[in-house]
Structures are given as C-alpha cells and as structure tokens.
Length: 202
Image (cartoon, rainbow, N blue to C red; front, top):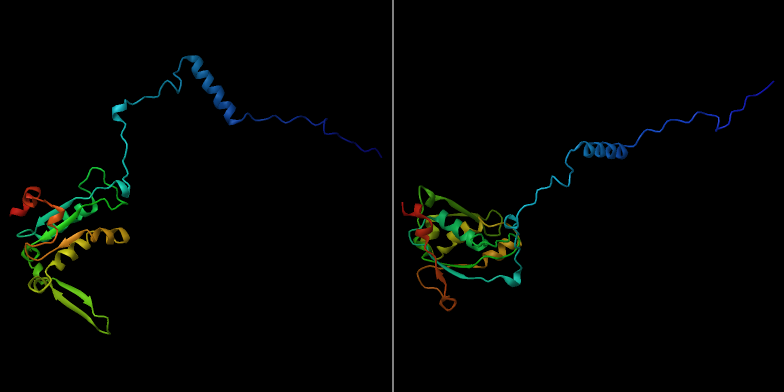
C-alpha cells in the first residue's frame, strides 16, 4: 500500500483580509486626492474672549463679611431663603459649593417676623429622651416664649445641605430677640431686604 504525504508548503495559501485601519487610510487618501478637505482644515478655532475659566476658592483665600438683617415684618420663608443663600455664598460670583465661602449673618427682631395663612399653628416635634417623650410646640407658642429666634434657626437649617458643611455654615448665623446684638465691633453691613424682595411689601 502507498500512503500519500502532504507537506504544509503544498497547501494553498489562504488569502488575508485587509485590516480595518488600512482600509480607512486608503479611503482617506482617495478623498484627499479627489479634493475633499482634510480633517485638520475643518477645525474651528474659538476666539480667546469666549474661553472662560471656573474659579475654585480655597479656605485660605475666603474673606467673610458681616451682614445685619432686620426681621421686623418680613415673611419667614423669604427671610430664611435669603439667609440660606448668604450663608452658602451663592450671592458671590466665585461660589464654591464644597467650601464654606458664605458670610456671617446677624438677625435682629426675631419675634416680629410675619407668617401667612395658618402657619402659626404648625407644630414642631422634639424628643425629651425618655420613652414616649415626643412633644409638640407650635410656631405661635415659640414666638411668644423665651426663644423666638429658634423659629428662624429651624427654617434656615432645613434649607441648608445636610452634613458637616451645612453644620459649619449654621455656626455663621446669629439670631437675637430685640434690636440689641453683641457684634457692633464687626461693623455689619445692613441688608435692605425690602429692596431685594419687593414682593415682601404685600
């Protein structure tokens, strides 16, 4: 018997498929030869005036001011939202959300704020620490009690972000009953709330 032996060289060579990168180069060369514009020529350069940069403040470069707000006759919600903006630093052009870049706020006449509708009867809940020690107190009773400034403090606290940064920003808020405050040495700038919020005059 005779056995047929075939070597590897005797087999017909398989045709290699052209690679994708090589095909793309060939099509690009054909397009440029026909007169199509190159990719580099189609780039549009913007003028330097349109290029803007974002400034991120550091804690060492922050300059805090002192702001004085009179709460007499001001609606509680609008007052608390404006205080939250100042504490966070959103009134400044270089606002940085991760840094305490806001100003110090001093609020006087806390007991003379204005509430609309039936909001004087809204209850606040607090816990004494004992079993079944949940108690309630309305806004009206808090304003008539010894600490009316807690109404403004709670309203502002719930408008700030929760976490270490929000707790740090709350330390920049000072609320007092009456017109006296111990921050005259800091020379606080009076904030004209009526000019900033014309709707408050209604």
